[in-house]
Image (tube, rainbow, N blue to C red; front, side, top):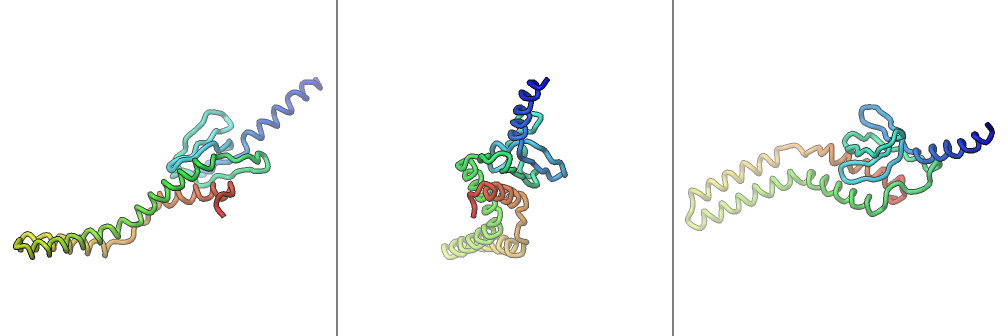
Length: 167
């Protein structure tokens, strides 16, 4: 009987090391397991029950990494950098959408002015009018919130902070 405890104890301890992380979802669910990878849209997580799961970052509230149980990095640095770059590009594009609308409207105004100077006054005035409407819509519209891209960047930044890649 004592020999059975000697064999089972290391097995139980190694199971605790394998599942040292906790994935907290936005619905309040906490999943014990291990973070094994990330990309710009999802985290890959192996729950205690087994089987790797890809969880969208939009459903992730946070990832808690237990470094005392397992001091090894969970995610390769290159994988994290690639995911972070793609998520930041998505956020930047979203935030610049309003500016693009304004610039596009101004370009239409300039093009209409040029057309009017080339003898196409009626068509030039139409293009300038459309450009003015687009410019006013761009100026009057609220700044986009970009909630989903911002959330993805926040989660990936926290993972990078936990790994010591972001200071």
